[in-house]
Length: 394
Image (cartoon, rainbow, N blue to C red; front, side, top):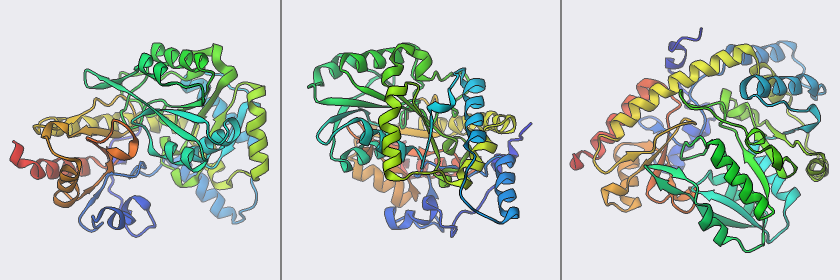
């Protein structure tokens, strides 16, 4: 059994070339010596012992050559998807990319042409729009609606937006930053929308292991098996096990015809796997890794409860109910403040570095995203700082 104290251990990441802590002063003006880093979506926890052991074994061997035996990693991915998500994956369907931002970019390159429209359900993970625009494609923002303080689909409005120039939809499931675990019915609605408008569906499911107790994630190929001929699945160990620096991701393409253009782009760009990432991922997708993830989900749920109780007690602030991920999405619209004003209170007074809602696209302006994947004591401290920064509203 993994004890909560495993995650309570405070690890000083400052001065370790850590983007989350070492870049926040340059970007946000929040000094690492007195601030709290709650922006970059990685965790302040060490990965499970099995991952650390894999790295130590590589270091002990002392030779860091090309990785050449992908079957062990493929078997681990297939085991994990079968045991944790009930989905059987063929080994030939699996491609290894340098993370899922790279995977998204490869999909844009393989399945769309310059000038095409790529649909995003906004607000959504900001890197999607970045790579789409960089590739010379057009971002089509289909705004999510809100119902009972949570995001829901607005399919009729999206249907009306389509012009026929759209060729792909990138889905974030579970949703970042809103924390939604999409239901089977919602996933089928999205699948039907893609069929109706002839879109390739890229389902980024990087957060699918980080689900709060009481919720269950469903992988898209099980929700809508009839659309596998247009479906690209993306999963990874990196978010689940806090090994984002390994830059390794799984792009899983069930349909052979759909694999061909993706394989061609990977070959043309000379992409091959990182040996450290492959060894770490193989070790993570194991029974020991599974036990660690289960304990992590319980701990994150505790952080969520502490944070939400504090935030929702501040007049004008509301934390969207978190069903998955470790990213709290807080709405400041009730304060009546402009974004620059509530951002100043969070960054200058509370000295907390967070992601600005505007970077997530249409519908995000009144929000800030807080990373709760840190020690409970840090979450408590952040909540107290926010309470003081907005004390005049109470």
